[in-house]
Amino acid sequence: MASSSSSDALTIADIARLAQVSVSTVSRILNGKPDVAEATRQRVLEVMERTGYTPHSGAQQLAGGKSSVITLLFPMDHAEFTQFELDFFIGAASAVSKHHYFFNLMTEPMEAADLLNLYRSGRTDGVILMQIRLDDWRPALLHENGCPFVMIGRCAENDGYSYIDMDFERAMFMAFENLVELGHQQIGFLGRPGWMRTAQFGPAARLWAGYQRACAQFNLPLHYREVEQLTVQDGYTATLELLDEQPGLTAFATVHGASANGVIRALRERGRKVPRDCSVIALATNKIAQLVTPPLTHINFPSDAIGFQAAQMLVRLLNTRADPVEQVLLEPTLTLRDSTAVPPDHPLFTMRQTG
Image (cartoon, rainbow, N blue to C red; front, side, top):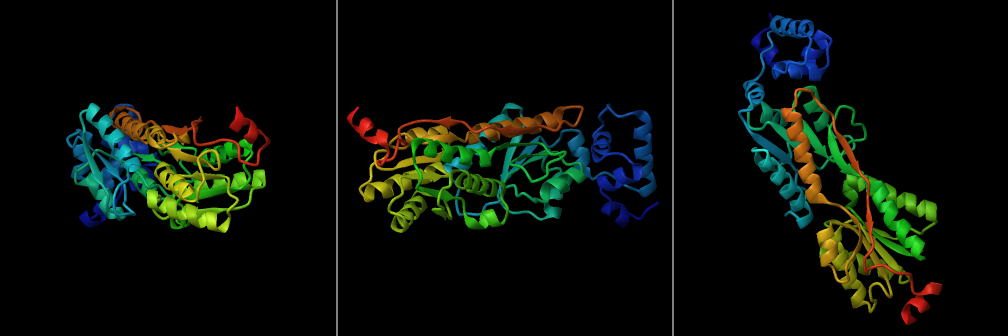
């Protein structure tokens, strides 16, 4: 029999490998789920006995549902939350409460041991991961250790992982496609921070890919700023910088609804009316798009509904007898409002002005 120190180092991934079964099968056995063949169950239990493996007390608590806590992990990279981010949390908390769980929000970055200890100490039943990178190590770690989780976002490879995400590449391509169809060729782009794209955060990388694809397909020149915080002030500053570089810009696309207010403010300061002289389109929630003046043409990003659905997925994962993998990729939808129109040099511009 292995020593206590070596058994403590074992994970259910080790047990699965030795028993020649999947990690999810070991997880089902540890959680007392009945949908495992008896011969398989006995083989896994024999491996556990032979290796001296003992489930952590936290895992035993989870099997009995004693924690009743769902945790959302959102590692903070800035000083305070935006309304956009708060909508995620409110949506998730609403779903968690509906199913009689407690909601726990954690914003500190975690090392692997800290993340696993959330489960092993019995402090959470499951985790909703946010701020997902294309090569994120957290989903693989949790999957290998049989820890229930879902992602808001997705990695480059997602076999066995449950997630809900938006097709960001398609969303940004759609925004530029709409502006091009109106006749715009000189378009400014306000993207997520450059360091996020370099670090391969999913939304930043995919939004940039959509922008690049649109520029290549429609033969558009590159006029962009990767904005640090995407606040009203940062949108304002970035717009003025782009207008100084390229006074002929007739449209702006931004990846964050709040920054659209800064774009419009900068345009007004330069004597340009929206949409008469310059169009503005954004990735935004319906709520933000309706509050902007003029009401904003936007690609809808329902962050509250995404948070709600993610929590619902995790509850299903915790309560089902099987181990379902749910993968939801939301198709972007375009809502036309009053912030976009044909450019001033378009043949239809005069007709629109006199119509």
